[in-house]
Image 1: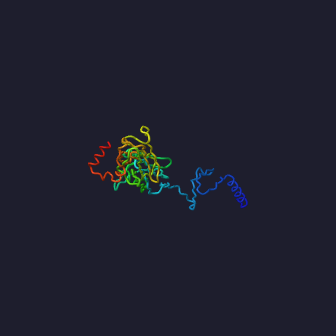
Image 2: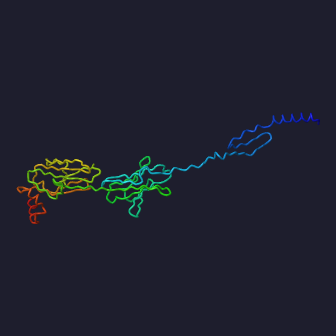
Length: 299
């Protein structure tokens, strides 16, 4: 073939190949594609990676944490009910438990939403959205001490609560504020007794007065009986008034704060004797025979 003919043949062959050749798609970073065309039945996948744009596919779960301080002090009144709070965020699949510490001993009280204490006064009282409260009812002095709210992480997360139990103090006192055991009145006079209630962080409970077993707060049978109670900074001051005292008003009088604390005084209503002289001498100053005769005379 002449050079001129060879040149024309090559030119025609080139044009033909350009017409029938497949269009090769552009590859982008990270693309995986199968290319097919009239010349290939299959082309293996090509992967192009950019080392500067590597993306991590693993994400770490947030760790749980306490909303309140790690250590907290709670004060409760004897006989009341108290909640020990444990607010936890991002708990996830972890579990909450409450334990009681007594020295080296640890007593499990609750696990999850289940109570495990043999003492029915303890229970788990969960409050939405995240407060795993421990409820203690009818608080007694033996409940005082440390409690721990624990999260089952590794290592465990612990929040401590110290519970203090306040025992109310009740005293019947004289005009100078000193405790009384005996009080003497003359017939026809007004009986006035004062009762001081202290160490009461929750002064919502009523102060009751009794003469023997008879409740005097709402007494209407005798008449002339009144009770006036006012709250103080840490308790209450209650006064009992009985007008026109007579011999039947003698006996034991009790001032009490519910069923938790009480104080009693012996009231003597005398006829003709000098109550002031008896008051100054006091029962302690009387001999036993004299005291016996006095009691027999009053009764």
